[in-house]
Length: 135
Image 1 (spheres, rainbow, N blue to C red):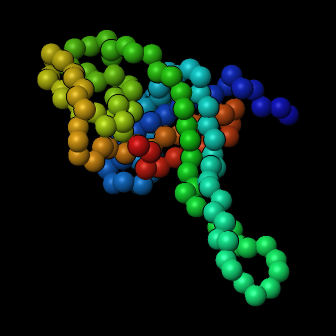
Image 2: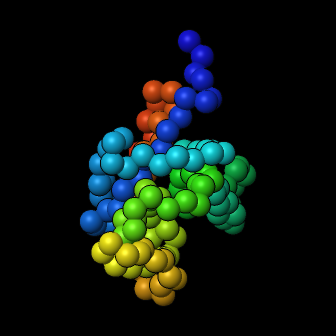
Image 3: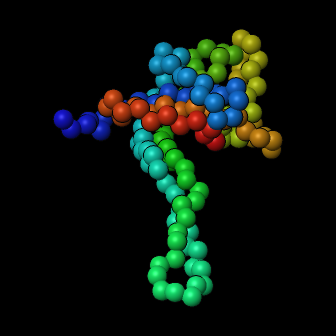
């Protein structure tokens, strides 16, 4: 049976330790996105170009293997003062520090130290892609 391109969802949750699965849940960590694209395996092929005393092809190495997830998030607040929006973990993974003032505001500002990392689950009509250590 063919997979439906419109039946997709994304969950994101901040990791306590870089690269460890933080297990996002649908009720707490679902994020409304559009233009969702995932490339589960990107890498570069490096040719060694060795000089040898015989004919034949040089061996190649696979390097810099990664996952690419791109999407658009609507810029909107959570609806309650002092409550971070659902996409807050994504901003932290992009190098923004979060400051919450209870019952007043949530602000984000660029940070120069190591950003947080997130676990992202991308579900594409029943196929789950799990990305850990996303920044």
